[in-house]
Length: 267
Image 1: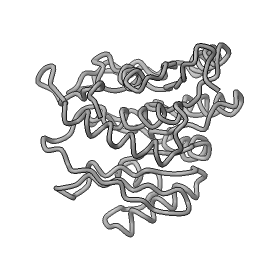
Image 2 (image 1 turned 60 degrees about the vertical axis):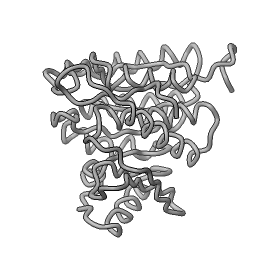
Image 3 (image 1 turned 60 degrees about the horizontal axis):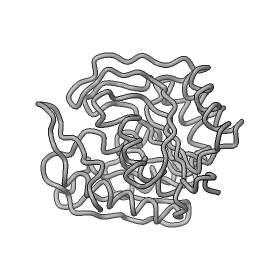
Image 4 (image 1 turned 180 degrees about the vertical axis):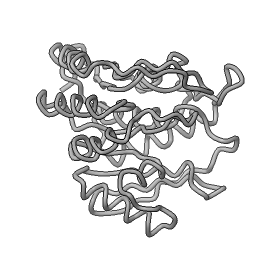
């Protein structure tokens, strides 16, 4: 049910980006662009901008749990997403809070490496995501490299992509979207959706120019926002694909780093 004010609420559990292109700051903009009120729980303080990551400081697991418990005590969110989780202890704390508080099944963005190439999740954290968080997921949204890390499969063909999707759902996720933005097709960006029953290829014309900072964050946040508004999962994923494509077409630069999405671009 919506909150007493009639507003839908989405919660992001993720790291920070003081430049605003990714992380919690970007997620909150995506929620606002969808007309959804945003809660947030900070997992890591990250000194980064669109071109580099300088420092990462993980928040104590107990403090992360307290943030989640406090906002949920006021009003339960209608949907939630996870982003950068830093390490295994943080992953376990987040998974425990989701289960104990009976929060909505999360949209899991398994952030492992930043767009600048800096690792944001240690190897033990990868194992913890597989063991603790994937089984809770409403949908998990890895890119190809993240799907390879989760499944230990090399994805070099359509058959391998489908095998990885099956493996992730077998881990317990209700559905998976393996993002194709970094795939080899020069004309289209093709994402593979699999819910254990059927495969859907979600296609959009590739936007020239080499992508942008924070596309994965925006995609998962847009799915969560649409779920909070009452969409079914397939419709939410399709809407998120349209949203990110529009935001990418309107991207801009603040400095010499990577382009930044226009989070308020009209779809």
